[in-house]
Length: 200
Image (cartoon, rainbow, N blue to C red; front, side, top):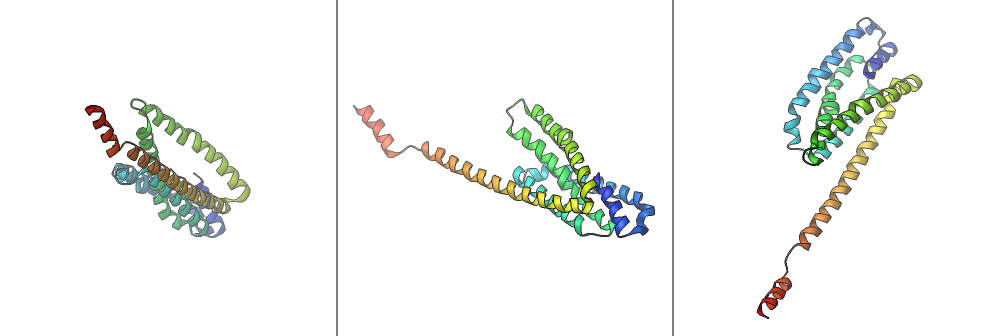
């Protein structure tokens, strides 16, 4: 939504000659965003999620957000925003598919639909309104370009935090699995004790 406001700001500051056909450019951006990015990503999400784990997908999503916001801070021609809109397939379609899939994966049998509904509500019913409110406040007080600069930093640190936490969780989980595996291994002493019991 705020990309269109950003395109108008770029036109006003750097390319006033583009103002007459700005609405056409905004419509083209939406077309590329939906049919160039989201539709293929939704279509391929099942194939990707079978080969890449969910946490890695989330890390890729945050990194992609960092790249998008960073590019928005350096381009001056609104036309260059069009190729960037293709990445919306990763930041929305793939992330939404991964979130819904992960919800079904970690939910007890029979409750998958409930948690998937909760995830969908949190994603579009809570996250989107909060993002719209914060984004509008930032655009109004610091401008679109500076807003994307700040958001690129936030997205980068979120990406680093998510990767770090995921790594630590995986390490702890592996250690616990190893402990459980070795605790269930029968030793020669155990077998010897059973033999002595039987012979006595």
